[in-house]
Image 1: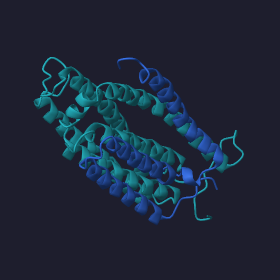
Image 2 (image 1 turned 180 degrees about the horizontal axis):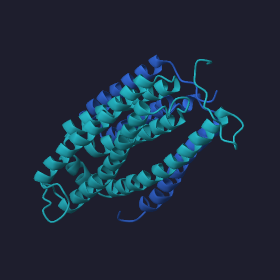
Image 3 (image 1 turned 90 degrees about the horizontal axis):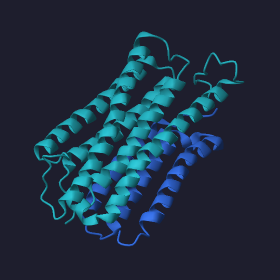
Length: 94
Length: 217
C-alpha cells in the first residue's frame, strides 16, 4: 500500500524533536556566533522542515515518483534563488 | 495492513484504490509546489534586501516581539502533530477521534491567529506598521521600514493561509461529525493534512528570519 501509516510513536517523537529544535534555535540566537548565527538558524529550520515532510507528510513512506514531485517544487525554488542571487551578489555596490 | 480502510468506490479512470490515492497525493504536491514558489518569491525578496542592508535588518529584527513569535511557533508545531494523528484516525475509520483531533487542530490554528492579532496590534501601537506613521529608532530607518514591509507581507499572507486552514479543518470536522463522508474516504483528510503541514513549514522558516536575526547583541 502506498502510504503506510507510521506508528503513533513516530508522530510523538517527531513532534517532540520539532519542539526541541525550536528551543535550540531560540537558544542559539542569543549566542554570538558571528555569521554562523544565520547558518545555524537555517540548518535547524531545514532539519525541522525535513522532519515534517518525511514523517508528518508521509513522504518517507511514499513511492519514488512522489519524491520526484516533492523534489521538483524545491528544485524550482533553487533555480529562482540561484539565478536571482547570482545577479544581485555580483553587482558592484550592492 | 489489512485493518486499514480501502478507498471505495474507485473512479473509473483508476485501476486500484491505491493508484487513485497516489494520483490525488501527487496533485496536492503539485499545488504545494506552486505554493513553495509563491512564498519563495517573498523569501527571495527578503534575502536580497537582507544581503543589501544587513545592519538595518538586524536592528529592525530586534524590534519584533519574540515572545509572541516563539509561542506561535510552538502552537503551530503542536497543531501539526495533532493533525498527523487526525489523518491517522481517518485512515483507521475512527470517526469520533477524527472529529476531536480536527477540532483540536483548528482550535490551535485559531489560537495562532489570536496571538498574531495581539502581536500586530502591539506593533501598530509601536508605530511599526509601514506607512505615514512608521517610526523606528534605527540608523537606517528607510531600510528598517523595508524589513517591516516584508514582515507584514509574509506573515500576513501566511496568516491568510492559516485562516483558510482553520476554516477548512472546521468544515471537515463538521462533515466528519454529521455525515459519513470520510468513512472509507480518507484521502481528502490526508490532503488537508498536507496543506496544514506545508503552512507549518513556511512558518518554520519565517520564524528565525524574522525574529532571530541578531538577538545576541
